[in-house]
Structure formats: structure tokens, C-alpha cells
Image 1 (cartoon, helix red, strand yellow):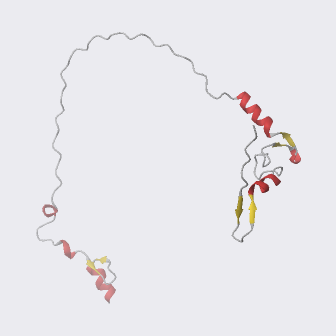
Image 2: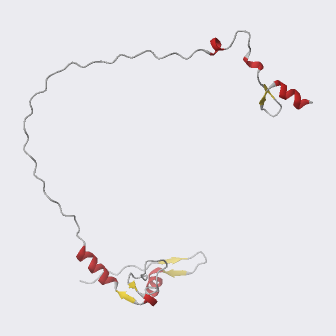
Image 3: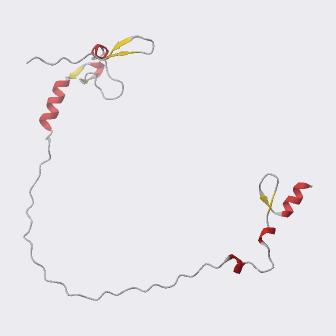
Length: 139
């Protein structure tokens, strides 16, 4: 049965040049990869000086021989179910809630003769300052 040939991946750059990615990948197949993986672009393991130690096919063959696709499972036998004796019915005790203390109203905390609006005054910049500080600024 003939193998199906994959289509060539050709891109056009911004400058209008055509780039054949498959040809580029094939040309740089034996170039060492950047980083500390110690492989070339094809996937071969490299040794000192960039020499090929193990080919990609050998690496894949070892991987698939040594790794199992599914972990081994061990069947666990369960003990037969025993019917439990019915538990006696007990009355449940309900908890009573205590009243939470109410937060006092602002009017009850402030003395009657005190006016809350007199403490702070807005200056020309929109900041709230004490009236004494505003008088010092104006001088």
C-alpha cells in the first residue's frame, strides 16, 4: 500500500518570500538543539562534541519496551456485608440562640449639644481639614 505523502508546508513571509518549513526542518535535522536537553532537532541523543550516541529510533524502542501503557491493578476482595442491628432512636437536643447585642445608634452616642458637622471643613483642594488648620493655611 503506498504511503500518503504529506503536503509541503509553505509560508509566505511579510516581505513576500516563500519559506518551505519542511525543507528547513530537514536541513537542520542534525543541528544540536538549544538548551540542556543534549539532543539534536531530530531527537537523537548527543554526547561530547555533538556526536550521536543513540538514534531517535533506539530511544523510542527502549521507551515503549520498558514502560507499560497501563499500571498494574490488583483486585481487592471485599468482606461480605453484615446486616447491622438497628440503632435505638434518641431525641435530639436543640440549641437555643442568645440574642445578639444591638449596635447603638450614632445619635445616642454623641452628646446632645455636639454637632458632628463642625469638626471638619473642606478646603479649596477638596480635602477635609480641621477649621484651625484651614485658618492657618489662609494666613
